[in-house]
Image 1: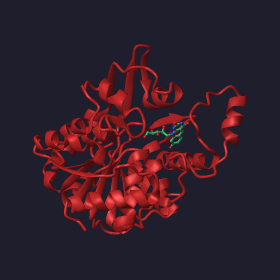
Image 2: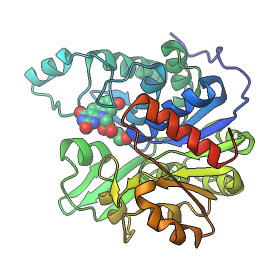
Image 3: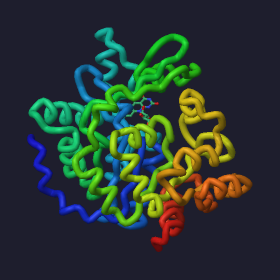
Image 4: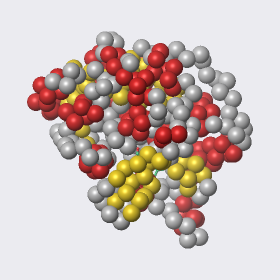
Length: 322
Ligand code: FO1
């Protein structure tokens, strides 16, 4: 198999979304319900990527692809109804098996690794996976270069997945680094997509280790800042707590003093002129407005597919798309 990219239409991106894994993918699903996949593009964090048993695994990209393909498991990652026979076998052979790679999911990583070995770029492999999974939205990695998030705790440096999954995000963080980011170029088409999108949505993913990593790719933050008026960010923090994952630990590890919607709006103030936050945090609107960011309140939780579509519509409405 070779990635052809033949299914790609000429880019006519209407909505460009910046996303990490689970929380971001839920809003991507909402956006795809609101505008249709043909008018949706997503740029996705690759700092969580890693190699397991010689296979390239791209958790955030796969979560976004599986969600848009309608095959994601209920828990938000991996394939629905997957089995773990291969992982059990690996355990029998004394291999580490703390990262939950299901049998069907492994086919994705094997196929991607085969394509990479044939000389395809990461973008080409994602195009191919998207086409074969029936995803019509344009999904791209933030970069084709290897960028890896390194988390240093009192017990030493770890990969992102070692910190989050193997060690359960139990430790405080001393340092967060995006190894390789200074030498990384934006993925082909990314800067064009930022320049030509009608509106840009920053999904409710971690501002440090998901969106922060995308913004750290040289050239991305400044391209986005030029589109500030058309860019809206959605808060991943509700009631001073992360909706999912240990975003508070990552914020503290990156040196941000508080975990609040206002802190999110402050982090994005140079790139997003509009900020969607939860009704419960309406008392923060004045502080957000003081940043020259327009606060828009709504129910920002997404417990089901209908609420994803509703939040997506409200978010687009906040930047004049109805
Ligand atoms: N998250 C877990 O909490 N435990 C796992 O075993 C796990 C396996 C896994 C396999 C493939 C994949 O694409 C994602 C997976 N995730 C797992 C999710 C992932 O660790 C994180 O949610 C993202 O990296 C954060 O966005």
